[in-house]
Image (tube, rainbow, N blue to C red):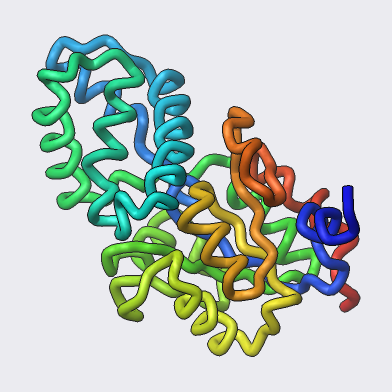
Length: 243
C-alpha cells in the first residue's frame, strides 16, 4: 500500500472532532414497525431481513448516485424502499403500494426513529474522551426534534439539517458550514455515515476523513475507512486528543 493509500485508510492523529450522519448512523429505521405493518397486510418478513435489505439498498444507492441517477434524497426515497422490499421478498406488483404506506408513515412520524444501545454508549465514550461531536444530515427539518426525542441532542455542539441550511450532502458546502459553526479544521475532523456517494464522497471533497458504516462488508470497492458498527469508532479514533 502506498503512503497516499495508507493515509486514506487511517485516521489522522490530529483528529479532535467527529461529525455524524443521522439516518442509519445515529437514528435507525424502525424495522420492527415496518415488519409488523407488512405482516398486517399478509407479508411475512422479519427485521433481520429488512436490516440486510436496507444495507444492500444503501450500497446500491451509492452506485446509482455516483452515476447521477438520484441526485437528491427526495429522489432516492422510493427507489431505496422499493429495493429494500424487493430484497425481503415482497412481489413487485405490491411494492408501490407498500412504499406508499411507508411514505405516509414517514411523513406522519419520521421512520428513522430507533436509537440502538450502542449509539449513546459510543457518543458517551467519544465525548468523555475529549472529542467534539456534531451532526450533518440530509433531513426534512425534524432532525433536532428526533435527536431530542432519542436522548442524543446533548452530545452535539453542532447540528445541521439540510432542510434548514438549504444545501444537502454530497455538496461539500454543508460540511464547510459545519466547520465554520464549530471553528474546526477539516483535517482534524472525521465524518461517519452509511452511504458512500452521499456521506463519504461529500466529506472527502470538503477535506474531512470519511468513515463508512458497512455492516455486511458490501462496500469493498470504495476507497475509504470502513467499520461494521458505530461501537468500533472509539478504538479506531484512539488515542483521544490531549485535554
